[in-house]
Length: 150
Image (cartoon, rainbow, N blue to C red; front, side, top):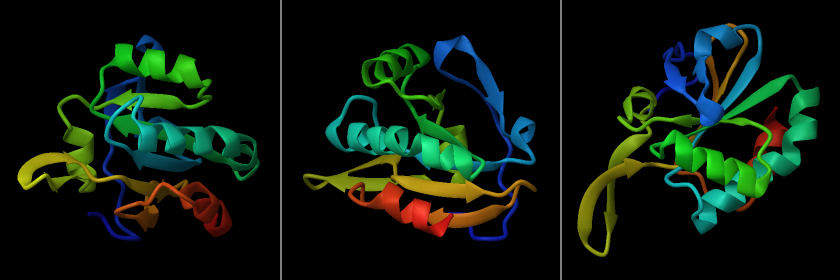
């Protein structure tokens, strides 16, 4: 996992709607990069909708929200449309971005170990440095806590 003050790893990746995004293109803006396991699952939907509902306040703070998961662009399109998400969703199918940020970790469920997304959020300042790290995020209250810290 990255630490506050580290340079945020740059990336170029596909997004919903068939677009692409590069972190370097957002220099000068505050970026909230949040990693989540899977579209259309209860916790991930709640988190995405919390970011959606906070979007007007986040915009006034000059923040750009980007969601990242291993889901396909097609899955992201459906998820975004279903819940009216006003921010871009990045498809990280090879989990290269998650690995670069330390969000791709060993997990355990029902005694079985596997690799997957550790729900986490990074706030990147306008100069491309990590300003905040939120690891092992608990969905309830996360976005509200993030708003207070911005």
